[in-house]
Amino acid sequence: MRNAQTLFLNLGHTIDHLMLLIFPTVVIAMAPEFGRSYGEMLALSLGGFIAFGAGSLPAGWLADHWSRRGMMVIFFFGIGAAGVLVGLARSTLEIAAALTLVGLFGAIYHPVGIAMLVKGQPNVGRVLGVNGVYGNLGIAFAALSAGALAHAFGWRAAFLIPGAVTVAIGAGFLLYGQDEPAGAAANARKALAQVDRSILVRAFAVMMIATVCGGFIFNATTVAMPKVFDERLKALTETTLGIGVIVAVVYAFAAMAQLVVGFFIDRKPIRSVFIPVVALQVPLLFLAGSVQDYLLIAVAFAMMFFVFGQIPINDAMIAAYTSEAWRARVYAVKYVISFTVSAGAVQLVAWLHQSTGDFRRLFLVLTLVALLSASAALFYPGPRPRAAVQPARG
Image (cartoon, rainbow, N blue to C red; front, side, top):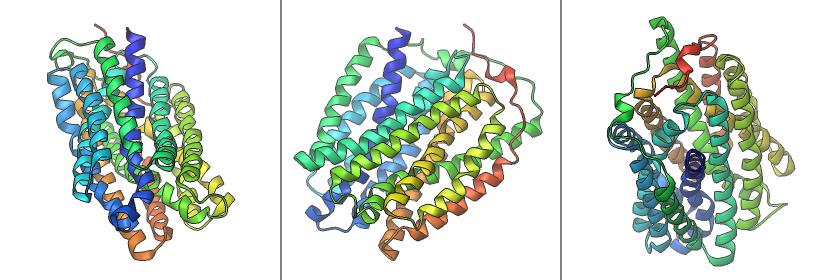
């Protein structure tokens, strides 16, 4: 049963990112139907990204005080039904409302699903790495499935079919997912290793900067990438399917970064993994602002590898410095901050493209954000407290 639950939780990560990122791919095909520009249509997803962040805190609180399994059941059925509603929408207002519901139900996964996965796990890095691969494959499949379905059947099918499949997976989780006694997570007590208060403050300060910067860069790049390829790969492809395939291949490769990073997290101090991963984003984001065609694809492979590779590092920091009793809520706070800031990234992508007609200025901004994150990483404490990351017993 534990293995079945782990599979469903990992699939949930795939679904979470897939449902949220279908729109940035198919928006290219939707814009002419609604008589709106790319920037105007992309702005319709702002409510969804805000809800994706703001909903994390109540989701984490409910999970710790009620039932983590119950919250995950709501996640599967809710986000699947919301995706179907997007596919049935007849106006831009209905699209914006349905996308907001996608974000609201999607907010449940990260604080709840991640907390369920890491509970009682001796190798947090490996667990987070595998889960990260599932999540990033969701990002890849969003581009691929959305591009293929929109090309073959129209943009509505890109939402209707994944939404229906998600509801079916939710039914499977309802049958095989394991429950915890009400309030079990809240009643658990796991003492954190004795760590100097100043070190804890420094670790959490760096963690918050990394969360804000990493979330901003992640969201901006994943949202903008289909349109970047649409504009700069004219010599290679001219269809949503072709763009979707290229984006999917890039993201699938980048997903492997989480396995690599997870491997090193279990064997090295977090700091020694954290610094190079964020530092290498700086030159790659700068290059992405100007290159095109085959060179763009090469830079995108490297850039997204390190952008995706940062995700398990941020989650491992929380696992290292929090007890099981509070972990879902701490993850919730982290994701509220990350995804709320990320919602601003969506608006920035839309505004900069609308005002400049390209993505050069966007990547310059992202380069500066990455530089801030790399600078903060230098202040992260040395070897993590080993006792803090031991699994909770009983």
